[in-house]
Length: 443
Image (cartoon, rainbow, N blue to C red; front, side, top):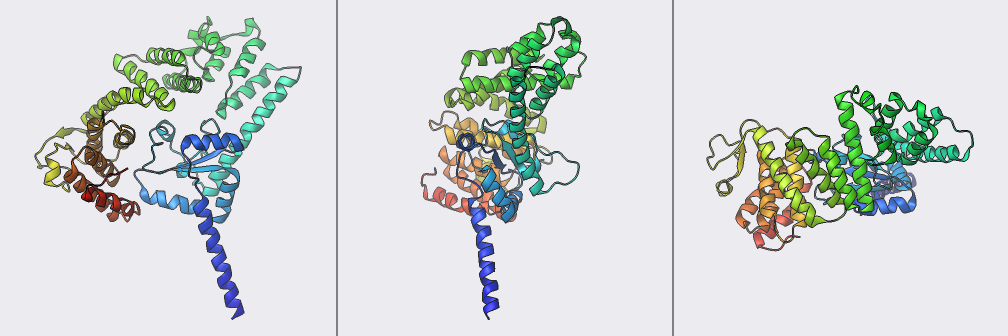
């Protein structure tokens, strides 16, 4: 009897520890708050980004992370947050999460720089991914210490310096100081094609000493153009991203405008130039908190994006239900001229982006200046791939604009789809549907 009570007690303690670990797994912090805490405690950020196309995955990963050993490691060594399907941080992190990583787990330093992630042809374990993220963060600290040692010693070697620069580049660390040291240490007669190519492969910030030294070198063309087109594109993209981050950190509008000109210069057609210009401006205003200017540019960008995505997918606008790809849409919603996809819909990055864009505007456009356009983006997302998440966004927008009955129908469909997939998110939306029916305000 005593033995059975002891076993029972141990089981209770074991499952209680799991529940406690799961409860504490993710901190109730925004992305920016997590970075501040990361800086204060000198810990990397572990960010779990919920997937719009796999709610089961969103439930499975936290459970796997909650295993006692893994949860203990996370709680002790990381600042961990979750970016939920309805988080307003999703639009901010879109560029980062376009990179597919194991288990949708992203590791960041205190400045928000993405740490290199584990790449392996073999299936990886949760434990190995977590430990690799921690090891990478520790390696960055080690490289920074090696850099300090390098500057402290008197005898400096150019090859050692190049290895140190490459190590910092591979770890995503700032190399500005080291690149300046490289330029100063390198004899003028040794600044050849290979040296210029080495500098450019470090993606120096636009306008920096290293950048100017490379592009103004007589050997630049000989160094630059033999590289593959894809490598040159990648280098330019990294330069734009790195430079934009500097402008954001310093809130330097003038520098941001120079980056815009550089971004346009890297493109051939006016269409591509405009795309590059808008993405730089959107990134800058979004991360500096200027939502008014962000919305001005993003609204036009999203309109064009939706039009291109619709054209590529063969979407047409019609009230005729014949051949409609989404037969679940009730007659009341057909009256809204919902766009329909011609052919079989396939989940696409375009559908996910338009849903995220519409959801973000739903959250920040309190003056309702752009909400009708956001409704159109949500509708296009549904046309590209009708699913529970974009139908939910569509319903929220319809309701805020006063289309109560249509919103109720669409939210009911969203819940129905989620229930069919046995997703727990359906229970979170039931109270929202009831508020719609009651005519109550929805936050």
